[in-house]
Length: 598
Ligand SMILES: Nc1ncnc2c1ncn2[C@@H]1O[C@H](COP(=O)(O)OP(=O)(O)OP(=O)(O)O)[C@@H](O)[C@H]1O
Image (cartoon, rainbow, N blue to C red):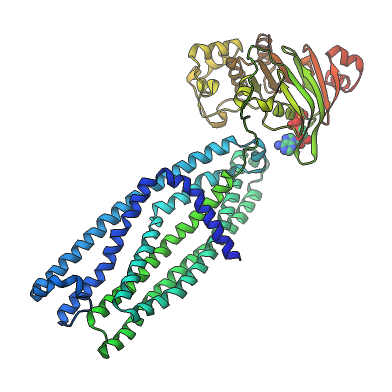
């Protein structure tokens, strides 16, 4: 039952690769065709040697038919002719084996490159929810070492297993045509060995899967520790984390040891069975020869066959590690490729005219990150075009979640969000996000220069970049950097201060000229002087735009048109600064507390 299920799975996994193989079908077929002459040459060689032995022994040969031309030649001429034929088959095999190897590896590299590209595209299309539950290290393992393991199926020539099987088949048929008793003996030996190998192979596969899982955990831990190295060192967690790392590493090694055990078991089985087969042929064949039922030529041919029959199996054993690892890899890569894209563009999306100024409407929106743990309850409000609204509330009240829903990084559990009267689910995501710019507290920086971190891959002229920086009063700070706009920034912006990263995010938003601007604690990491500079720029930037501002420092939002106050995911107050102060509710008490502090 278990094995039939695993066969089914293997078949399904194999089908997973079919579309990739189809794209390189011609090369793949050609490489398979090359296997045929190679297998035939390999079967013919023992026959040629057998014939030579018969010539030397001057015994009647069992296979006269293809060698009629030898009858009129002298012994040395006949031996020379056979040697020449042998040489031809060797050259044949060399040429076809080499070409086949080259072709297969070439196709393999193309297929793995295609899979890697598809994985990248798929992963970047998955909803943020997927990333909430998948550690980065696990994903990286699948995108790198699992795809690599798949590539090895091709680079180790493991795909040549088809050729090995073909060779075994040709040898088997030829053996039966020549001498059925010896052929039967060898086949009887082959069957249990194959069964044993299949068993080891299944065990190997299981251990290999577990080893890859442990490797993912190992990489997740590594990634977490490197990303959080500051906290690790500040809180003296080095030893504690090392201990945790050692434990996972130990588990990984244990699983790898198991794979090595099964791998060696296969090689060892084949090694002794091949010797036993030769001994068997010598024993039974010797007995037949003494009885006059077999000649030396055929016996020599069968000794070579015994060796060659198990040779493809031995080769198979060597390749089998790569093949099984490849199956595990396809399984793990497929898991990611099968991950559904939760947030999709509508089949025929509506695009409201971009001249509209950006009205946002939440209609009875409720939302839970995890089933039944609602963080937003029945939100119902409208933000008019050009209105500036602040979202206020204690930590964890749900302010950032509102922004994530608005930008469709997550979808509401119930209710709907409308942009200029259109449900945002009916808008193409690119269109939705083109209409709004979001500035978060922690500006993310990509490796590249300042310019490319503002344009983010879109084609803006240098003038446009500079003008966006000027409009947000960021240009002066950029010019202070060592190479101005051309300063190379490192991954995650480690050569910029938190405030500097934030400033770049403002320029990034300004250049896009969005209808809606969202600031999520955007000025929190700026010093008072820089914040004043940005506030001034913001006033211009916010003109004629709908804006949502999240701020903990209530003094910065006093002038907005309306303040929405949230508490545990519910909208509890709404009004202008003065109205809310007069109301004397949560906002008023938060404000007075902050005033007291300052
Ligand atoms: N990715 C997530 N998965 C599960 N729960 C989450 C996730 N992000 C936030 N939450 C939960 O949702 C609630 C609202 O979080 P949210 O980030 O919206 O609060 P916030 O008002 O923006 O807080 P802050 O002022 O601290 O930024 C919190 O209780 C938080 O624990």
